[in-house]
Amino acid sequence: MLAKCMSVQMSIKAPFDRDAQFAAKRRSVILSAASAFRRRGYHNTSMVDIAKSLGLTKAALYYYVKNKEEILFESHVMTYDSMDEILKSYARTSLSGLETLEAIFRDFVELLTQSGVSLLTDVDSLKGDWEVQILKRRNKIERRVVDVVKRGQAGGTIRAGDPRLYVFFFMGALNWLNAWYDIEGRLDANDIADHFVMQLRSGMAA
Amino acid sequence: MLAKCMSVQMSIKAPFDRDAQFAAKRRSVILSAASAFRRRGYHNTSMVDIAKSLGLTKAALYYYVKNKEEILFESHVMTYDSMDEILKSYARTSLSGLETLEAIFRDFVELLTQSGVSLLTDVDSLKGDWEVQILKRRNKIERRVVDVVKRGQAGGTIRAGDPRLYVFFFMGALNWLNAWYDIEGRLDANDIADHFVMQLRSGMAA
DNA sequence: AATAAATTTGACTCAAGGTTCAAATTTTAA
DNA sequence: TTAAAATTTGAACCTTGAGTCAAATTTATT
Image (cartoon, rainbow over all chains, first blue to last red; front, side, top):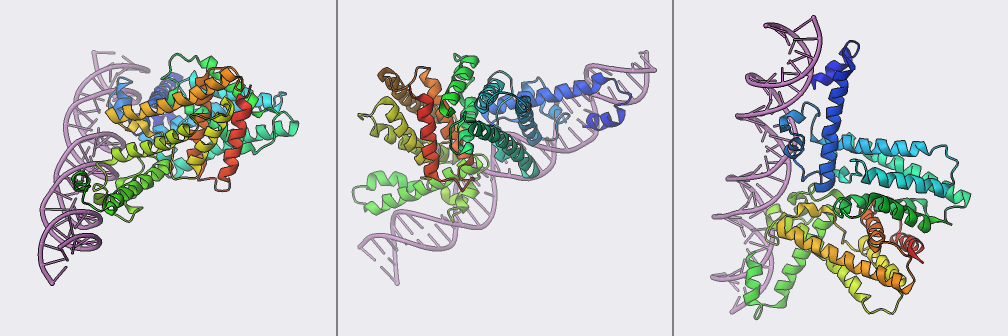
């Protein structure tokens, strides 16, 4: 924790390596933990588990992180950052509403199958402000996707119906991915993405 | 626990009330807990919480139940029992594959929104044989639904494609229901069922 | 009313696992 | 080579919550 406090004052002189290395290690702590959370769940993953998978000791983790809850929080943040970026990349697209939705959904599926990032459901284990922040971000993302659906409906590419229900429906599919993806090893990530997008399209096209 | 052991020997003489009452109370312990698990998650729900919501003391719960894990196990069992029943009721139907699937899905949605029963995701918190049993039941149900999809494909009512992926897709939607249903109070359970079935149909029809 | 069975409780034990910290070790820079 | 900073550790601490049990209380039976 010292390192992080120092870094602000030292950043003028300190070589970039320092901070970068610290950040990289911190990041890998969170990613490694996130992957364990996804498979075994937050409460079934102990700090010792996380530490061992990195060749460290439990105590060492606290050099990078305030506490276990912060790890959960940060892993959510990472996921939402990636999703925000995806959404942003389609902000001024010339694609139709439906096409945009398809593209976003495909990127989401790829995000969750390819990278280590995962959609996390243990929001209830976050307390107070942390929980609030994460729920806000989730809502923000859902709202943005809902807007795309509305655009598609206005433009006539997406069928009528409560936009929120459309979004909930396929966000659920996305979420469920975590429960079986790495288990059914024989399914190819691309096949999944193709199928899901196909089902999204035929389920929503006007 | 005595009561349960006795009941076997005493069942000849004992008035039905006794066992029935015990079973009813045990059942309500499990239902009440399941509902809390659904909202807050298994690990965020303590035995004290469960007890309080029934006007009891933690210790009293152990009169009806071996331990906390058994509650989780039994609540899964209850859900799967209900689903089995739904599946069974369409075993010898004359409906097409697609129509059968729609009907099943509608019943599933209603099961999860109307009754206290919930689809539970905390399987990882079950250990050893208990986990195995529950996973077996889940697989069995998924396999049966997959069979319906295959039947629909064979009969030409459902489009081609990996049947498992179809099932995973809408089982995910079903599952995600738990995450937002009772929060968004303004959505009517029937509207949800209607929408979901509509999206299922248009997403899978040949 | 009296007795037995069923049900509930308060007070306790116990283990798991998150967190802390001073000391040891390693890395970096002069 | 050496001193300061960064990183890691072992050994404890501490909180939470599951599970136990003998005793108290309630309910049913004669």
